[in-house]
Length: 123
Image (tube, rainbow, N blue to C red; front, top):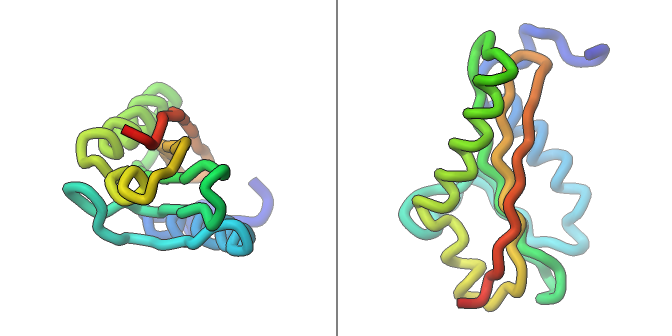
C-alpha cells in the first residue's frame, strides 16, 4: 500500500515481474522459468526444484481493473483451473516430481487473492 502507486499496477505484466522477482530469491533451490510451454499452453511462472524432495511450483497470474473481492476470488480460481485444464504440470510430472504446488493469483490495483492446490506429481 505504501510503495507501489496505483498507476504502477496497470496490467498483468507488472504483477508478473513483481512475482518473478520475488521467486528469483529462491534460485539456489529452484530453476525458475517464465512464459514457457508445458502441456497445452504457456504457464506464467514455474519453479522446478533442483532436489526432487522439494515441491514443484506453478504460478498462474490474472489481473483485472477495479475488481471486487468476489471477482478476485473467482479470477484466482480460474487461474488454478487454467493450470489444470492446460496441464502445465506436464514437464514436472515427466521429471518425477513428488509434489506440485499450484498457485492461482489474482490482482486488481493494490489488492490480491491467492488460491493454492497441492497435487501429487507422480502418475
